[in-house]
Image (cartoon, rainbow, N blue to C red; front, side):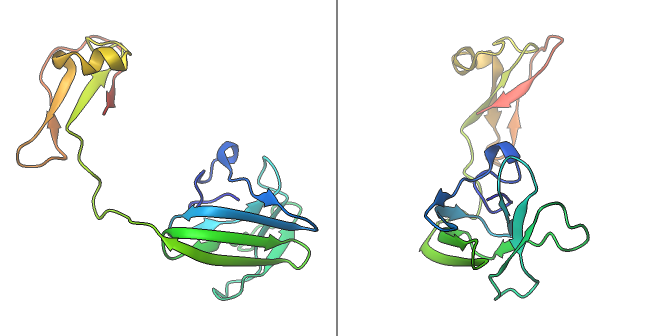
Length: 166
C-alpha cells in the first residue's frame, strides 16, 4: 500500500507491506490517517503495475488493475475520512477491498510544545552532536512565556549549515 493515509506516505521506499494469505488474499492492520488521497495498492517498488479504486463511488470498494499508468482521472485512491485503527483485506481475484475500522486513535488538537530547541550544525557551537547541543546552553533556544510554540535565541553563528533539534 502507498498513500497519504499509510504509515509510509507516498515514499516508494517506505511503502506499507501487506501480508500474503493465499489465492490472491492480502491483509494489513494498523493506523490509517484521514486523507482524501488516502491510498492505493502497488505490487513492488514502482508506481505500476498497481490496483486502484474501481470508480468514484465512495461506498464501492472494488479494485481495478493497471499494468501501467492509465493517465487521466483513472488513478483513483481509497480515501480515509477518520484517523483510526483499521484492518484491510484485499482479494486480487475478486478485485475487492474490505476496510474495517477496528479501533479509535486519539489525535491531539494541537501538537505538544517542546520545552526547548537546540541549534546544531557546522554553524553552531555544538557542531552536529545532539549530545553536545543538549549539554550546551549556548545553543539552546528558549520558548516564549506568551506562546510555547515561539522560540528565540541570540548569539553568534559561524559559516555553515544549521538545523533545529528538539
